[in-house]
Image 1: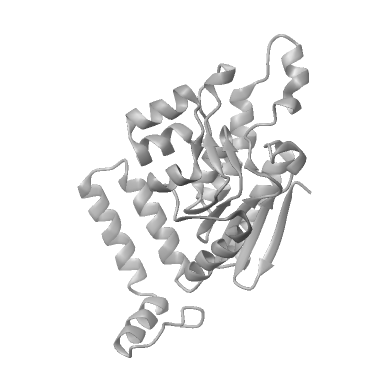
Image 2 (image 1 turned 90 degrees about the vertical axis):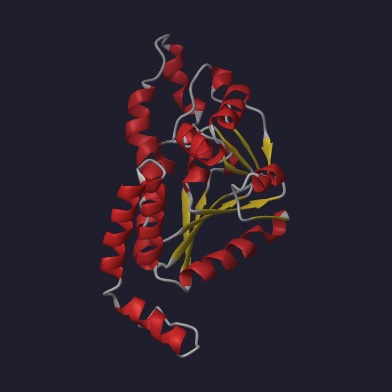
Length: 259
C-alpha cells in the first residue's frame, strides 16, 4: 500500500509508504492519503503524518510521467494538480482533527506543500526543505507560494523558491516553521507527545481555530472580528466549553472526551 494507517488510542498515524521512491506522490499515494485522513477525522482526536524510510515526501513522481514526456508534448500538469495533488492537500487542510507533521527527511517540491499544510510540525535533525521546482523549469505548486509567503514574507519566499537551496532543520526551527527538532530516533515519540496534547483538547475548537487563523491572514480586522464572534457564539453553547469552564473553577483537568 502507498499509505499506511494505524490507530493508537486517540491518535492516528498516517505514513506515506513509497520509501523506494522517497514517498513521491502518484495517484495511488494521493488516493490513499485522502482515504486515511478522512478515516482519521472519524476515528481519532489527532493525526500524525510522516513518511517511511529516509524521506518525508519528495514531491511528484516524475518517473510516473516518463511516457508523457517522451511524446514531446509533456504531461497535463494542470489536470494532474486538480485531480491528484489538490485533493491530497485538501485532505490535510480540511481534516476534522489537528494534523501533526513528523517530518523525517527531505520535503521537496510538492512535499513542502504537504509538510506546511500540517497544523504543527516536528522535524528530525536530518530533515530539510527544498523547493526544486525552478530547477526543472516549473513554478512552485501545492500551496508552496502561499505558505512560504505567509510564513516568511516575500523576500525570503523568493530566495527559497528561486534558488532551491536546502533549508536545514535547525534553520526551519529558527524561522518558526516547526515546534521542535529532535534526533531521528526520537521523532515519532515527540510527535506522539504533541498529538496527545492536542487529543486532550476539543477537536471542534482546534479545527475552528485553524480556519480562523488561515482566513485572517487574507482578510481585514473587521472580518476577523466577525468570524471570531460567530465561532465563539457557536462554541459557547457546547458541553465541551461548559466542561472547560467548570474544570477551571474546580481547579481540575477538563475531560473533553465525555463532557
